[in-house]
Image 1: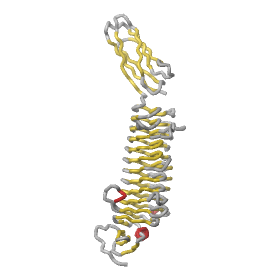
Image 2: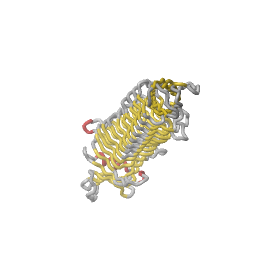
Image 3: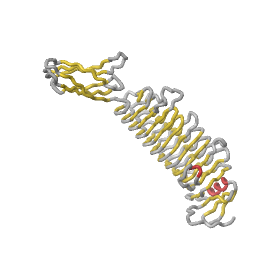
Image 4: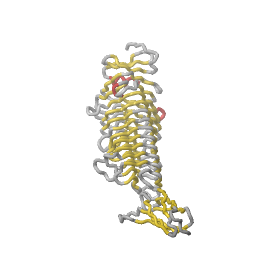
Amino acid sequence: MGRFPVPPYYTADVVVKRVGEEAVAINSKGEQIAESTDHANVIQAAIDNLPNGGKVLIKSGKYVLKSGLSITDKNIVLEGERFGKYPFEEYGTILIKAFDGDLLTINYTDSDNAGFALRSLVLHGNKGSHTGRGLVISNAKYFTIEDVTVIRCDGECLYIEDSGVHRIVNSRFVESNNHVIHYVNTGDWGWMGIDAGSAGTDKYVAYLENSPGLVINSKFYVGYGGIFSTGTINIVNSWFNDFEWVGIVVAGANSIIIGNIIQNIINSAGAGDAAGIRIQANYVKAIGNDIRGGTSYNMRYGIYEYGGNDYSIIIGNTIRDYKIKAIYKAFANSIIISNQGYKTENHGTATVTGDGSTTSFTVDVEHGLVSDKIAAKVALDRAGSYKAYLVDTDNDGFKETLRIEVTYDTAPADGETCYIYWSAEVVG
């Protein structure tokens, strides 16, 4: 093997770079350890030659892989180069699949060495030409993925099972014939700045089985649904757009969905329960979300409670463009207050004008609430008594009117305006 000069900016144990049609791997001493037109063999040799804690740097360029790459029981860093240009799959270090199977597999049987880092890579699954998944991770104890793009995979772009603590930051997972992201029995994870979308028919952008975690400042788009989670999940300040059935399905108790934008629930099939957020677990909090069904689409509900669970807290959400109801309340003990588009509280002022002799007056006000199971309070601006009750004035089976009958102790003067202050709140 020959020797190559290694510039000082090659801060890695092994560097892989393109030289003509070949890929070449060079160690930190400048020694060539692999050279071939089979780029996968060169990159794999670089990985295999690393000690634990070592790093492979794959220089910018396109590398065509005729077989899959694997990291097994090694705590290493695999890093490429990125230049922040768009489209992302055309610049930096790009690994393009030219075979059927999984592109990069990372697996651990030794828990003492069950960690890794991936940075600044593009993994291109070549969907339409080749089958298989993009990035597959099993039994990893801790790891980080940063500035990584996995695109155009026949299977999942990202599949993780039986793994532990990890963070994925500023990364993209786009276009799959399956779920774009699929987790199984994986916990204590966090995503920040994730861009994920374009799932297969009847598939979710992120399908998370028994995998509790946190999502912050991320973007999800195009699929049957956005996120489906059976584990406890917190989703904060993220954006969901263009889904056939639902934006978020929460099936893990104690989940928190706060400050998200969910829009364009298409529902071309006319499903009766298409919704922005679907709650099917106990003690879920949905707070301050902006849910917009899309004026030309067919979202039935903004938030939909489902099943035999209870104790949701649904507060301060803005819900628009729904076809049936802003919130479908199925749980007896849920707290639902202060949601725009779903009034559970209201108040107002009514007036009567005196004629100098009349002491009794009747006023009707529309309470404007989502239910006619309400409690009302009334206050007068002068001494007197009142009674208040509900009336179905249009005979449609819903008592939309609060009727207030007032008797003053003395007749208001001719032309005097008297004020009646009322408030009403749904109680059932």
